[in-house]
Amino acid sequence: EALHGNIILLSSAPTPNPVSVENGGCVARFTLQSFADGIAVIEIFDALGRTVSHQSISLQAKQPVSCSLDLRSSPAGNYFYTIRYTSSFGTTVRNGSVVLIR
Image 1 (cartoon, rainbow, N blue to C red):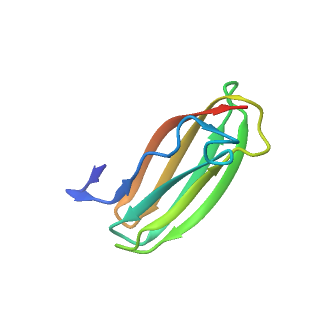
Image 2: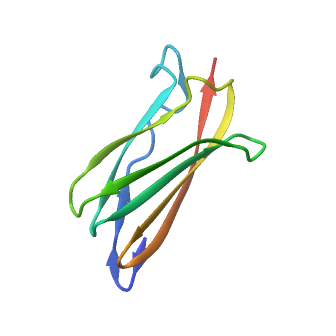
């Protein structure tokens, strides 16, 4: 995402996807890397739009951080995530989905 001519956030796709007890232990992992200090808010929603998880992570410029989407206490289904990153350059949002198989 480019704001003011600057790329401020890189994120890898969550893996594994789909996730299951046998494949990832119901936890999908991904990496975030920012190019400016800031805060990433990661939210997971179920198919009805209810918040399943909410976490805030402080990111430092050029320091990759391992993150996870923990669905261990959730039933099988489709889940959607939003990563909202705010830094001195502004705010950028990444959206995606992960499938949980039980």
